[in-house]
Amino acid sequence: MTRIRLGVNIDHVATVREARGSAYPDPVRAALLAQAAGADGITAHLREDRRHISDGDIDRLSKELNIPLNLEMAATDEMHIIALNAKPHAACIVPEKREEITTEGGLDAARQHNHLSPIVRSLGAAGIRVSLFIEPDRSQLDAAVSLGAPVVELHTGAYANAEGAEQQRILKRLRDGAAYGASLGLEIHAGHGLTYDNVAPIAAIPEIRELNIGHFLIGEAIFIGLENSIRRMRTLIDDSRASGSGAP
Image (cartoon, rainbow, N blue to C red; front, side, top):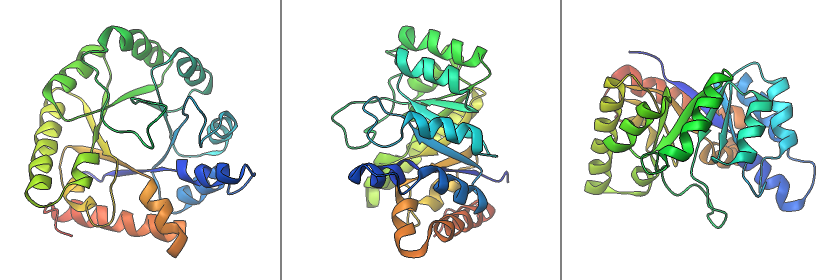
């Protein structure tokens, strides 16, 4: 079975930095440590309010990384221009609300089709691989194809927050969505809320090619170090992929 790529989101290293308005801890240093630990890519979300990642971080990440940078961005004119100037490997368009603590759900690509279309087209023409962060619904997957986005990232937050039968119901929805999206020719990624305890069933979904994980890894790094937290996650993902069972 194809090895899953692991993208490491370093946003919350910057969250700690911004809590004191200091120059440390440096999210770019964290990205380079993640790269050394075997991360296949780095994800950073440049928010409208700059609550964590800064424009300078994106500039430095673009210059210093040897692995792909995935820029998470809202579909705004400002972020569109920044992405075109930064030229990351990929841009993942996400919904964004100023009052939210973290991203609270998938992008409604179906309803926002006319707004998203020129942005997706422009980024793609610039050689930036566009991804849409969506729920695993057929209407959203169909919209991604219609928009010409080659990649979708399925929102796993509801799965991560659920328990028991409800979690299994959402897991089935993710499995079905991944299979349907892949049948349309989309590359399937997934992420949000994934931990050591819940990642295995997601990693076992055969159509998923990449997982993006951040907050948990940064939190775990407080106790065991960033490189160790990433290496343990890498092992769990690889073991689950090899077995195909999703067993912890």
